[in-house]
Amino acid sequence: MMASLEFEQLQEEEIDALVAVYPDILTQNSVAAGKEIKLGISIELETERKFDIVSSSVVDTSSPGAEHNHSSQLHTSGSVPTTLMHLPPLLINIVLPPTYPQTKPVIQSISARYTWLAPALLRKLAARLDEMWTPGDSVLWQWVEDVRAGAFLESTLLPHPSPNILFSHLVIHQANTKQAQFSAQTFKCGICLSVQRGVKCIQLDCPNADVFCLECLKEFWGMCVSEGEVTKVACPGIECVEAREKAKNDSGDVGDVGDDVIGRVLNKEQVTRWKRLRLKHLAEKDPSSVPCPVRRCQAPVPRPKAAEDNDAWAQLRTCDSCGFAFCVACKRSWHGPNSSCAITQTKAFMEAHVAMMLPKGDPRRRALEGQYGRKVLRKMAQEYQGEKENQVWLKERTTACPRCETRVEKSEGCNHMTCYRCTTHFCFRCGTKLQTESPYAHFSQPGSCYGRLYDIRLPD
Image (cartoon, rainbow, N blue to C red; front, side):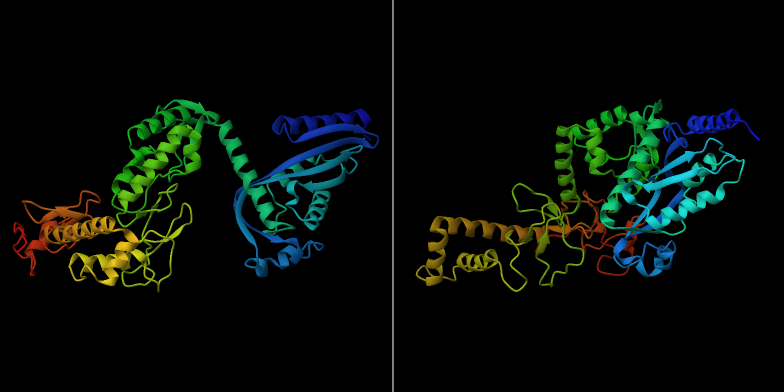
């Protein structure tokens, strides 16, 4: 039979070993029944796992196997799916009797922060831990390792009274845990190549997960913003830069970073300028986009991908920035597909007015003059006539790029054109997109452009 001092020494050695490896998970107090141990054990899964957070009102959480039984049918029934690797801590209160480890330790309570684990699973975990103990063997270390590994998580269902609230807690906890782990490590900056602690670095969400020190990234991005190089406010890693160069003709941008990352690196004035330059760049990149008519917004609104020219809904635009739905023709709030906008009708009358089809005494002409004023109407008619002549000139003298529709004028040279905006190769005579690898093959094939590489098209 062991003496009480030997039991106490074994307990102290086990506790010291735990504290040496996990200094923040254990607190202890002396109580009448022995030694009270409080463990706060965070769950660190080996790999990410998919979980479904469901309302506890539709799951019988009184039975330990209920979550597993309902798992398949509740996967799509109001569940909130998420992928997790770091779960909030379980709080375990234990009393070590004076004769532990010869005597069984008493688990007084187990609770989960944010109540992310159902009561039935907590009871099942307590029974699992009890079964691990054998007389004479220390078991605290085994308990801690088993809980940390999440070995008790047999089901991927997490019942909770408010699934969306629990989802928010779990996502925030995972993000904070990852950031804490990142801050405690050291990394080599991809710009200055110096080794820095993670707390002074930032990891970008790019294909290579490149890491840079904040000072280098702040200096580089700040210079790009001040010089108007908005496309370079992205991952400056070598592989990401090369990938962006190869994909510059595509719609996707490799190594792009989110607004939250930009806000962490740049100051308020730089962020404001960056946002303005980015909107301008997006508008130039997509010629079909139009600025939002809301004065305080002015964000570029692209043409819907599914829109067709003969579709009654083709004039509808909805601003992603402020949510304003408007007509692309009249720039007013959306009036529906079956109603003509006022400007379209006015332009029809102005065209008739310019063509001198309406005599001075015509009631329709007098009505327009009364509505807009004679001078204003005359100015509008002149602008309309000028725009009409401009469209005729563009049609006769220019050819639209088949990719971005930017119109290009040619005064001399061959008919092989390269769009200055999107670098697409095309034929100036017929507007056909040419193959980048062999653009001149088009002029050697049977058709209207055969042998016409240097043919200059002039208006009649």
